[in-house]
Length: 282
Image (cartoon, rainbow, N blue to C red; front, top):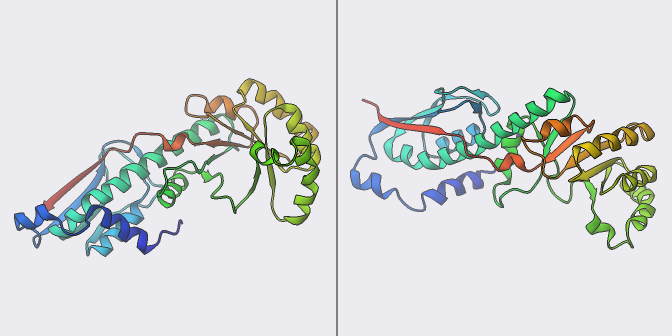
């Protein structure tokens, strides 16, 4: 479960309905009773349905059907339906469709990437970066979780992930290695992950006490040999690969023996194709 505040739900409605629904008002149909039905035109993974229900509640729409986030969607299947006044149904229409299309798109892409990776390595994990469009973090995170993956890093306060941009201020890589013992003592309950550009850097970091190595934009061919040697010398160390991993090469990376794949690819996909029908109830 991802905590999404009532303020966020209200803001999503307010973005599309800043004051009134002028069209529905002028047509004089606002008080008529109706039904709104969301269905999918393609197979996929559902995400964002609970937020749609919360929008329904705020707009006094009674939910009559709703699948949970993470459920498999089949082409033509009704995923959410509700009943209420036409003015409320029309206010809910586009904001709910937008949530479902974007969230389901990310969840579906995530599930596909994870399934492809696990065909090669059943124990591998896929973790999604925080390179998301600003302002969409809660819904994006929920979509990734619905697809079966986990967040790589939710923010700077969460994990110790050290990059070249950090050790540039320590006199270089050797300066960083000298601080590993101190960091482990101070933050004894945290794991230390260090990004390395080469096999030699990785071996030095592992010897200095790093809990994990993250390789960025290393080819699967190089990575496979490096992972075998690093894990042989330092059993239990975590090895992660990041940088340019997507549907086209995920199987190659999964076959290198790494523990996790870090990716942004799940965010860059077409939205799901969600159909909306609003009808009058006689």
